[in-house]
Every structure is written in C-alpha cells, then in structure tokens.
Image 1 (cartoon, helix red, strand yellow):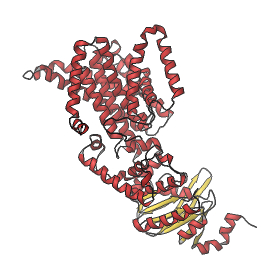
Image 2 (cartoon, each protein chain N blue to C red; image 1 turned 60 degrees about the vertical axis):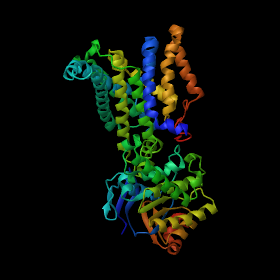
Image 3 (cartoon, rainbow over the protein chains, first blue to last red; image 1 turned 120 degrees about the vertical axis):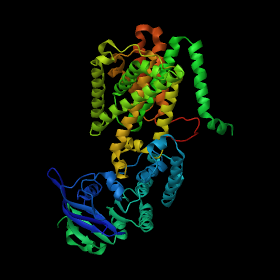
Length: 252
Length: 325
C-alpha cells in the first residue's frame, strides 16, 4: 500500500472539515476525489502535505507516518502537490520554477554555489537539462525564459505540475488541475496526466469538479461531503448513487 | 575573445585596479572626498547584505545597524587590545604584512560575531512575519546598542577611541567586491533560488521540499555576517566608535537603499547606496534645507517609481542578458 489514511479527523473551531476519514491507495493508482464545495477535499490535501496537522488519526506513506512532519519533509518522502489557486513563483522564470523543484536532490552546497565551484556549475547544467526535458513533456520548453506570471492561465497550471514532478514524487496530488481550462485543454490534460503517471510510475490523487475529466481519468472515486466519505466506487457506481445525487442536487 | 581573456584575468585586474585607485586616493585626492568614497564602499556592503534578507528572501529586517555595531565593536576590540601583542609576537615578519593579516582576521571575527547575533534573531524571527518581524528586529538592534552603551571595556557612553586606522580604499572595496560577488552568485544559483521562493510563496516553497525555516536563518546569518564586515571596516576607517552611529535611523537608511534600489535587485541596492551616500553631501550647499530636499527626493522617487530604480532586474556586464529574477 502506498498511502494509508486511518480515522483522520480535523476541525477548525466548530467546523469539522474531516471526520474519521479513511482511505488507501495502491502504487500507480489514479484516484479521484469529488464533492460539493467545502466538503473537505482541499483540507485532505493540506493534511497529507503537512500544511495542517490532523487532530486525530494517522496518515502513512509507504508505512511511514506523516503526522508531525513539516511540508518539506513530506515532499522529500515523496508527496508533491499543486494548488487550487495556482501558487507559482511569479517573478521567477518558467525554467527556474522547475529548477527549484530539484532542491532536495541537489548535492552541492550553498557555499559551493556562492564560490561557483566547478562541481556546482556542472550540477546546475545537468539539472537545467532535466528541467528542459520535463518542460518539453508539457510543451512549455519554448517559454522557459519567460516569467511565470506572464504565462496564460492554462500553462501556469501545467507549469505547477511540472514543478511538482521535478521533486521526484511517488504520489502526486492535483487540486483541480482542469479549472479554468477550455475543452481542448482539458482533453490534453487528461492525456498528460495519464502519460505522466505511466512514465514516472506515480500514483495520482485528483480533486476535480469537472466530471468529464475525473470520470474518464479515474477508475475509482471517493465522494466527500461535510468531511465524511459518502460513497466510493467506480464512476458508474458513483453516478447512480442516490446519496451522491442528494449531496450535489439536494433532496426533492 | 577579448572579453573571455579579460574574464579569466579578472581577479588580478580587479586587485591591480583597486591598488592603483588606492594609491591615487591616498596621494592625490583630498581626505574629505576619500572618506565619502570609502563610506560609499561600506554602504554598498550594507545595502547588498540587507538586500539578501529584505529584497531576495522577502523578510523585513530593520535592525541592520545593530549587526553592523556587533561587527564594528568586536573587530575594534580585537585590534585595540591585540595590536601590540600581535605585532611583537610576529616581530620577525614585516610589520605591514602582520598588520594587514591581523586586520583581515579581526574584520572576519567581527563578521562572525555579527552572524552569530543574526542567528539569535533569525531563530525567533521564524515565528514572525511582516510588520511583527520588523518590530522584533528593530528591538534587537536597539538592545545591541544599549548593551554596548553599558559595556565599559569598549568605551561605553564615552565612545571607543584609538582604533588603529587599518581600513583604506583598497580593503573597503575589496570586501565590497567580495560581498557583491558572493551574495549575487548565491542568490542566483539554483540552490540559492530557495531564498527567492520564500519571498515569492512560502507555502509553495515548502511544498516542493525547501526547508524555508533553514533558509530564512541562513539569510539572516549571511546578511549579518557581511553587515559585521561593514562594521569592522567602518570602525577602522573612522578610528572612533560611538553607539550613536548605530541607531535605528542608520538601519532605516539601509532599508531605504534597498527599497529605493528595488527590492530584490543587487544592482539597484549598489546604485542606491552610491546615490544616497553622495546626496546628503552634495546638498550641503543647501545648508539647513538639505534634509528637506533629501526627503522630497525620496518621496517623489517612491511616487514616480514605486518598484525602485531597478525593480527585480539586475545588470551584469560579464553575464549578458541573464538572470532577471
């Protein structure tokens, strides 16, 4: 099992964002999480990446507990993510945005960088090549000199995925990657996510409001509402589940 | 071709040029002008090192003069009390050589002491951000000043005099060059981009594995180290220290340099350090109106160009069209 979440609860004051949440994820699996606004989807991502600590319960990646660890440690263990409202390093170039993702794989020190020692220069050159390769995969290498903030929105979302991939994760968390994209871009994205999963042998958890994207991409879905799992299963099962229909549309 | 050749020999050329200029300033330029030029060099060190903390890492320190004071008093105490002992211990070597090496070591020790102080601020500062951090650093700068004011061994309220006049144009600009080269290489390397990611978005930085707390502390330590070096040079240029030179206003001066130059531009910080050191002197003719004119210039600058002179851009003659982040 790559990821196990057991009995995880998290509340903000009186609001219970997650209640006794549990799930498990195989290596290489593509899992979709859906649910109405405020259902606790992003909270789950924040708990998984150490932004919030759960009040109770345990989260484990390949058997190692994530509770009490900070975000950067969790990233080093192998979880990378993107954000619902794109958080790129706006004033850095596209290429630099990817390069910083290699941070914990670097071997040369800051002092070596300050003195521009040959080892440090060589490592930077290798990383630059790797960054361009990754950018190529997403069709962004032509814009690598541009500042991230000058990219169109769809490309910013893609760049965020590239940056997450640069950290070499085992598990990739995508928070609404298709938001703000048009139909063609969405189609491309579905292909890209599959390609990335196969190439880097990743597991992916996807939060997505766009049902066409999530239903084509994920063989298994979890539906959250008010911090509780109300349904799990294949897209077919979810579509017919009366509880899900009620959560989204209300009772007749 | 020619440029590549120049690039390979840039260290000896730079040192040669500094020595030649040092000779010119010592023998042909009046001491008042020389002193201003030296002060520009010290301010370049101060502005560049503060730019690492405030501009590149996006923290807000207004206690830089405090670290400068730590460096100044530490190195001065070493040279004042160690001067005779060291000279007699190494009497078999030429006195000038001993003096220069002793001076460099003292200045470095000042830098280390300051960076140690920086560590002390850096760690509690990890819990604070924005205005709160600014107030904490302000408080720390004042604490340092008051502690020094009450230490009798280093002059206390009388001031600390009889510091040997070791610093000159050559040393000041050599250290300024080192500061600028080291800091700019650091922040514009791949590893050093970690500093910039903290300024840009701390949560995103953490999410890609950057230990932001560690890099903030490093920024404070390295920034304070060079501030301490600046202080050491200052002490050995003026040969007299008083805590009045390291008040809150002095810190603000450095902040103004960084803001005016453009938060996150070393080129801008250098230019602002030059302009803001010369300006008050150039305005001396306006006598009592000079500070008014100075303030008006600053205000209009901020109205006309709020991003500072350079914004986030850098200008590097050796490395064309690179790095503008």
